[in-house]
Amino acid sequence: MLVIFDVEGVLYDEEYLPILAEKLNKQDEIWEITKQGIQGKINWEEGLQTRVAALKGLDEKTCQEVSDGLPIMTGAKEACRALKSAGWKLMAVSGGFTLMMDRLKEELGLDYVYSNELIFKDGKLDGVKINVDSDKSKSARVKIEEWGEQKENIVCVVDGANDVKLFDICGLGIAYRAQDLVKDLATTTLEEKDLSKILDIINKHYKLELEAPAPA
Figure 1 (cartoon, rainbow, N blue to C red):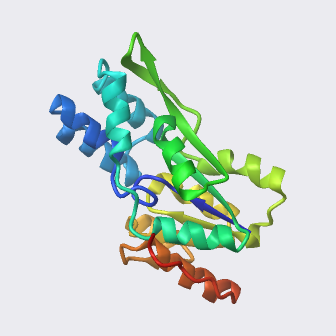
Figure 2: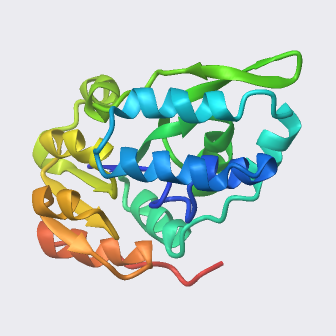
């Protein structure tokens, strides 16, 4: 049994690059490109490269500090704790960056993460290495095959147009506070801003009795 999560807007309650852009007073420009990418209106990879290029020259320390300050989604720790206790594997596939993922892996107990990588030169942001493109399922399939997980036993929790290919490889697709395009393709939707509520959906679908622990 496996749950695959998107990260920004799902495990994190913020989008990273628009916050980082505030350091250069470019938040409106970056957020507009971000929205178009999430909504599927522009080529996702091109949009990512454009956003990072606009922030070129930012200090690596600043990039890390902004990442460290991203709030974890309400209910994420409880959901992950309950799933791990029940023996589920947890994966995150993000169009975001490695410097955001180590903290999530540690705090949420994720088994594996896929993400892109910001490139720094002499301590300054210089570009991006794209490992995860608009077809996130390509990244996820590698571990799915290694772990021997069957499609019907995989749950995906996502919010953006660049996530929908993940629905092709899962038995239960949950659109979490998502774009309309994503809702149309999902098995079911969750609008409440509490990720622990995915446990109710999983319980109903698989006839389980997972319970969220009390918040730590």
